[in-house]
Length: 210
Image (tube, rainbow, N blue to C red; front, side, top):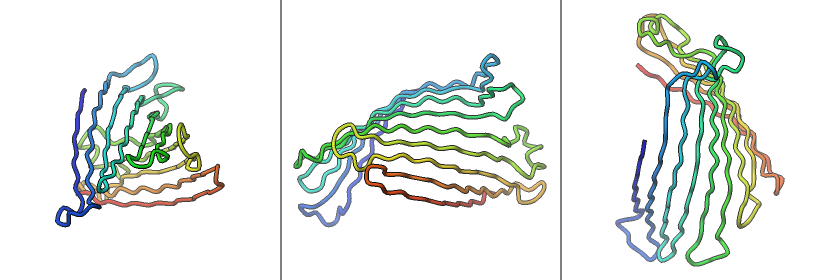
């Protein structure tokens, strides 16, 4: 599968000044997705993707170009201990992110980012529509999220790692009712180790579907 995107944004179009701002983003992504199950590896499918994005922001006469190159590989429904175990979805996405300043060369920087996730699918959504209407807990999943930023060029004060846990649940509000509430609760720990700054973040989200 091949996707190409272009996005243009203009800020303050009715007030053109030397400080007017606009932005152009070009992106391309090439991916391969397979839902073919593998009995040998106890998986339900896999995906691989490579992409590139070119982002140009203009502040008056100053240009700030950004180039991002990223890869992604994922496995769906991995059951490492046998076909009857709870399935796990795994994904890893390394990326190189760069930024520059058309006026100040000292602001040029680049970083390497690694993002990884593991999703434990405790309860999967029912495949049968009739069974779905009789099942209170539609889905329950637990996420482990990991991310690390490492400087390649430029300042290293922003180098950090982030570890998060998140639980998502979807519950049917009443029997035989096509109405559901989805709840997400998560916690993130983030450490900027070079400047000895630590952040704890707790989040919750609810949505209703009917």
